[in-house]
Length: 349
Ligand SMILES: NC(=O)C1=CN([C@@H]2O[C@H](COP(=O)(O)OP(=O)(O)OC[C@H]3O[C@@H](n4cnc5c(N)ncnc54)[C@H](OP(=O)(O)O)[C@@H]3O)[C@@H](O)[C@H]2O)C=CC1
Ligand SMILES: CC(=O)N[C@@H](CCC(=O)OP(=O)(O)O)C(=O)O
Image 1 (tube, rainbow, N blue to C red):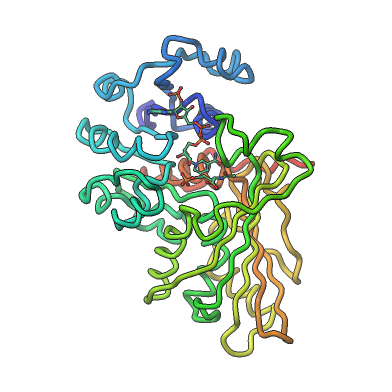
Image 2: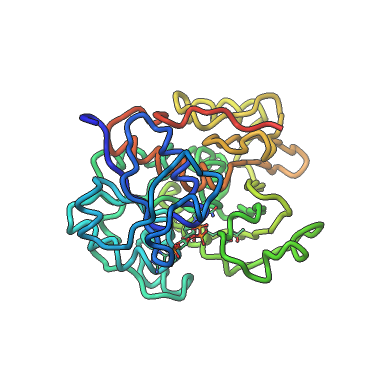
C-alpha cells in the first residue's frame, strides 16, 4: 500500500461505523487495520454484524491510542457526542489524522456546543483546528488538514440545498424555514422507546422542535456564507423508513427569479462536483433515488403567487450524511480524487 492509508474505526459496532467498514473495504487506497469497540473488544466483528461474515475478518480491538497509532494513519470516530471532544486531541498528539462524524467539533463556539448538546465542549484549540467538512462548499480547506468535523446528516441535506441561493443573494436568509424528515437509522443502533417498531411504524412524528442540536450548525454555515448572522426555523420528523433524509426548504425570493434561473444557478455552483445532482424542469427528488449512495439530489419549485421558492434536497443519512462524506473528506485530505471508492449507484427500488 505505498500510496494508500491505513484506517482505524472507533465505534465500529454502530451504524456509522458499519457503513464506514462497508465502504472502506471496497476503497482502492484504504486498508482497514483496526475496528474498535469499547464494549465488545476481542470478539470478531462478524459476531456483531453477521452481514460482514467472510467479508471483513477483523477482531474488534480495544480503544487504546498507542495501539491505534501503531496500526493506522487515519482514525474515523463514529462515536456518541462527548467522546471525540476528549479523544481527538490525544489521537492528533499521537500523529494520527482524525475524521469525526459526531457533532463534537462542528460548532466553533464552545458555549453553543454546551447549550445545544448539554455536554462539555472540546478544547478551544481543537475547535479552532477542526475543518468543517461540507465537501462541496468548504472542500478547499479540507485538503492538507488533519482534523475534520464531518457535517451532520440534516445539515448536509439542508446546507447543500440552501447555500447556492444564499451565497448569490437570491433568497432572504431571514425567511428560511426548513422542514426535514429522517429515517430511523439516523438515531443510531441503540434501542430507545422513540425508535421502537410499534412507535415508528405507520406513524409520523415531529421532534426536538426549536431544540435540535443541528440548528446552530446550520446557522453557523449559513451565516458564514451570507456574511451576516442568520437564524432559521428547523423542524425534524421521524419517518417509518430505515435510511434517507428529505429537507424541504422555503424562502422568499429576492427579485424576479424563475425555476430555470434556480436550476441554472445550482448547476453552475455544483459544476464538476459529481455527488450533487440538480433536477431539471421542476422535477423533485425522492429519498429512494439516493438510497445507499453518496449523492445529494436537489430540485426546486418557484411560486410566483407568493414570491417563495421551495427547495427539496435528499440524501442517504448514513452515506452522504455520515460515512460517505467522511470518506470524500479523506479523499480530499489526501489529495485524491474526491470520488475515489464512492462512485456506486443508488440501490433501487
Ligand atoms: N446514524 C446516522 O445517520 C448519523 C450519525 N451521526 C453521528 O455519528 C455518531 C455515531 O452514530 P451512530 O453510528 O448512528 O451511533 P450508534 O449508536 O449506532 O453507534 C455508536 C457506537 O459508538 C460506540 N461507543 C459508545 N460509547 C463509546 C465511548 N465512550 N467511546 C468509544 N466508543 C463508544 C459504541 O460501540 P461500542 O460500545 O462497541 O464501543 C456504538 O456502537 C454519533 O455522534 C451520531 O450522532 C452523524 C451523521 C449521521
Ligand atoms: C432520526 C434521528 O434521531 N436523527 C438524529 C441525528 C443525530 C445526529 O446525526 O447527530 P449529530 O449530527 O449531532 O451527531 C437526531 O435527530 O438527533
